[in-house]
Image (tube, rainbow, N blue to C red; front, top):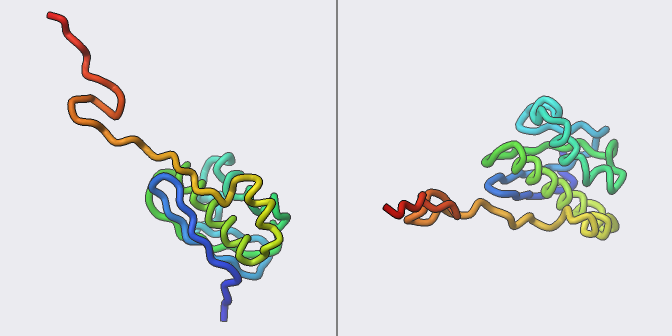
Length: 130
């Protein structure tokens, strides 16, 4: 039977990631695919791996992630947040390192809503004097 050592929920923009930490050798799976296959850009792969590098837990755990909503950037941020939460749950001594790097804080930046009488959130329609 497979036992989850830690579970974390990460959020960023409209993306939500559920992270399951299991004993293993450092394999990261996102929605049934390998990490490099799911996130095509190496920067996004780096973002997801950040909490593991800070806590030196690269090869300690296998990580299973299910992520939904948003785009690639939001999903990578949500994965990072979820991994950090799961690592803090498994190893409370890593909490300070994760907190100081800002991985446990949910990024509050969201897309601003469109206002009526305007073309976008801030963009106005072109003014015509005549």
